[in-house]
Image 1: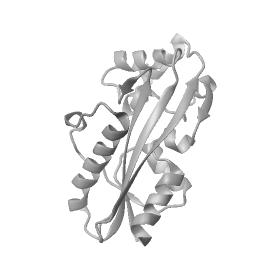
Image 2: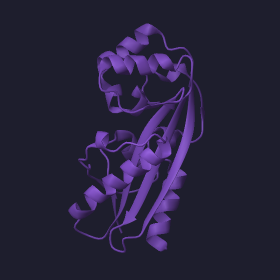
Image 3: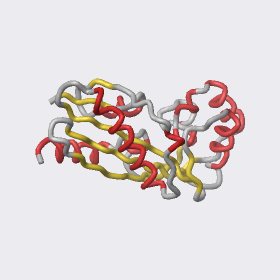
Image 4: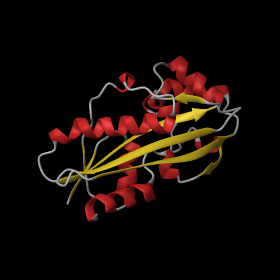
Length: 190
């Protein structure tokens, strides 16, 4: 059956490739800021469902659609993609005092049967103190502006400053491997 990833995220694409999946990718153009909730798990689920709802009418053949959303929680604050370099800098500086907890929701939909399964996974990234010159280089490059919490664990500038990851690295990358595999099986075989 055709597999569609409802995302532009390079990290999510890489996770599916590592899982051995062949897929096509398409992005849902939704106003993420219009969907709000104070609970990070509920927020990410609402956004992942909204992405699926926006994409389903565009998919022409029976497919398994995977949509996802992620936020980072740091010291009780929900961090999304930074809207400015100043915000990115502030997010990165915060990791010197508090770990970054990624909250990732995945929604998998069988477009033929309309069966849908969902899940939420969390992982914790503990950083060593990130020097100011590294933060400035990350901000200057601009790649971090595309990531919730302003970081990617695969960024070579950051790898030396990651003390440990508690949970699946793929969850931090935006698509928890084991949960995604389970959800795909649920909608395909159930």
